[in-house]
Length: 86
Image (cartoon, rainbow, N blue to C red):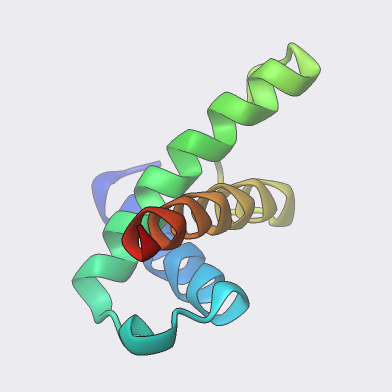
């Protein structure tokens, strides 16, 4: 995917993960933070996918890739919330 595609994909994945996790006080993170959470979450999700299945996950604009990216972003947000509480 190109740079602009990663931004759009990351924004959507970060937004979806924010809806799933909630976030309490930080519910409205903004577009830039959604993109960062989505892109980092997609990377984390791809890493976890590779560890779990042994296969490489190449990201494209499709539902399986979006699911992996959202799950990675949810995992990232959950860890960040746990660290924030401490």
